[in-house]
Image (cartoon, rainbow over all chains, first blue to last red):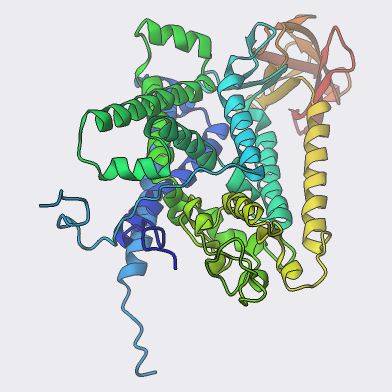
Length: 95
Length: 463
């Protein structure tokens, strides 16, 4: 018999699991989205088109773009995870 | 009264399942040497590469602020985006290919999560000691020894993480300058942020989350089974040989006692970084690090039993069927990989170091000039993708008598520079009629074979 000390090891609670998954996967997707987006568009040109007086530089532009994408992807993942988990249970007794 | 330990203290969050920390036991063996080698090579590359120089500048620099990527002698521009896309596709396909062939080779030996976790575990071992010492230390009350050991571990971890963050940022801005900036305390806000962000992510992922990342957060761990078949290399316990398991003295004749080869020493479980029992069969938590193979082999050697009770094998081989290396899926992945790789190499080798963009002036269709001339106006963008300044000659063709006005014979574009050139093209009214296709050509003066051609249109009156 393997003692309890080894077996099963650390397990995360469902909430922790959900948060970690949402944060991590949305991070990955946001990173890919940022890469594609800024490969095609220069943040400086974008900024100039919106507000010519705003001069925050490329690096801040990239960062803003990344967090913008991350907020969107995380929001999307979080709502999906929440809807899946809070969906009404299927009634298995009466088919 | 006994000293309170974690277990008899009431748990703050009872909703949580009991959270047991895994203390992977250290093991020596063939695969351990292999994974140490992989860790050293990969981490060595990561920390060393930004310091390499090529022609006096950083050899690998993804200069995001300037929107240029330097790869050895090559300079890539946003226009070279297809290369990046191709490279990503090749990376994904390689992962499929190696997974189909050898299972989770990536997880056990090459994944940054594993590699950094190995480095962090190593630092834990040199400061906190072996597995049993670590377990004892965690249970012990706080005293000077615990503080010293835990403190030096944290010191190593944090220093290493900060250096990792610094190196990471060093791929995106010149690392030598970055180092000087840090010493002079003159680092920009975003630079500092990304460095700390990456450093902290390394610290959390490799120091604390470790196998949880693989178990709960990694998408690859879930979908890799789709690439598996019965001929994929997996780590497996040979149940037929091992069962019935049981402890015994070395002198016992196992045939007489009707025992299998497994002596149930649980060493394979103790060394597992994800805390599973490989004898329960293939589990998605298994990252194929092969620590259990090393552990079992060492025991088999001690018992004078043949090695390989736990080994790299395939499902077909375990069932006594013939194992096939070349299957349709291996063949398909290999072919696709070959096509994409050769495509990437060919297009990179034959890449013209000039980019030419022609934008026709949208404000006017054409202008009539004195002397019966028709004029069209364009803006040309010439990008010199080489690192030295270069002279070009511009020509236009497609309409009889078409000539360029205001264009110097020799157009000089700085190395890695973009030149915006307003161009007026003119021809006699008799030659211009309606919409006509023309082509602009930019030729390098020092090398006539470097030519870039771009199509445009010349508009004339329609009587």
